[in-house]
Amino acid sequence: MKKVLFLMAFPIDYTINLKNKFIGQMEAVENLGYEVWVTATKKDKIFLCSKNERIMVGKIPLVKQNIVRCYYIFKIIPKILSIIKFDFCYIRTVPPIFSYIKALKNIKQTNAKVIVEIPTFPKECEQKNSEKKIFNKGISFFEKINGKKESLYVDLYTIIGEQTKTYKNKPSINIENCVSLKNMPARKYKGRSNEVCILALANMAYWHGYDRIIESMHQYLLKYGSFPISVILYMIGTDGDGSLKKWKELVKKYHLEKHIKFEGMKSGEELNKYFEICDIGLASIGGFRKKSTVTSELKIREYMARGLPFIYATNDRAINEGKKYCMKVNDDNSMISFDCVLRFALNCKKNAIQYTRQMREEAENNMLWEAQFEKVFENLDYRK
Image 1 (cartoon, rainbow, N blue to C red):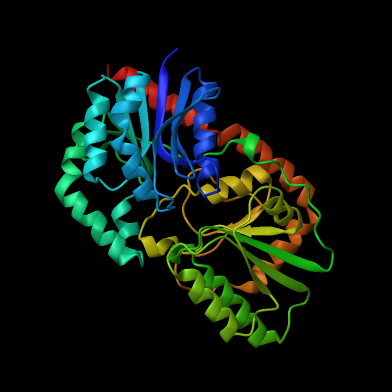
Image 2: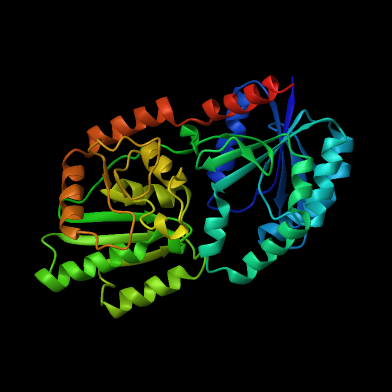
């Protein structure tokens, strides 16, 4: 059985927004008949893990910054490779720091195939418009020094975003973000008859555009004085780039505290409760701020898997715009009509059970990771 190493700082002991994605990817590769291993961390320890084994391979400082954790994992790659020989190594892109380049070189010396995922393409758009200016200057520095060296050791790039057949002069294929239904139960709708509840679930960043919905609610109340039914928007997630703080200030400025609740990070059963009571969800409604014309949002796939109708703005090849369980708004700074939002939410309330069943079926048919990794391994076999 061929072995695949997912090389990442996978946290065993706490939750991050991307954890479900990583678990779904690994389960899919295992379902395709490969033996899957992952570099993982728990507190100050680094482990090499498979489905049945956990081997301690090193130590790490007690920090949550992903790049710092990756640095220590890359440093111990020679030790990991001395334990098990891998046929493939799958890596979600990281800044090309020196220890990463050295790790790639070590892996290639074992004749393993290296696959690097680019989760946002063109990624320069996200970096250029992000408020993490100091961090992005660091990325630019390492790209300038080591960017070309990375591609020397990569066999295939997997690209999420706009179509391209090459990346850094190496072969690439486009894949879509997907889900694992095992980790995302279909919601058991318990909507409140006298309320419209909206869920905004994200690692809050400027390109989610949630200020647009805040402005929309504010303008509606200026025009009508009140909502025809109680409205609550639950904002679930941590601050990704400083936007959450700004949105809290905007809510306070418009006196919307009764209608917009900032709930922080939720997971597991706590998160499931919000899916049960909410009538609709919000995906990204600010993708234009990244200047990217095509996206493949994880959040849309989670809403599909759980069966929560949603509002979105970006162009996504996996979404059928004619479906009544989704509502597309302009991907620009124009005002969103909250009248339309309310009509959509009330229709979703009325048809909640039907839409949940329909969305879950479509996610099962079209949004599973297995189909994406079949493309990856078939491509590598073809290039032999």
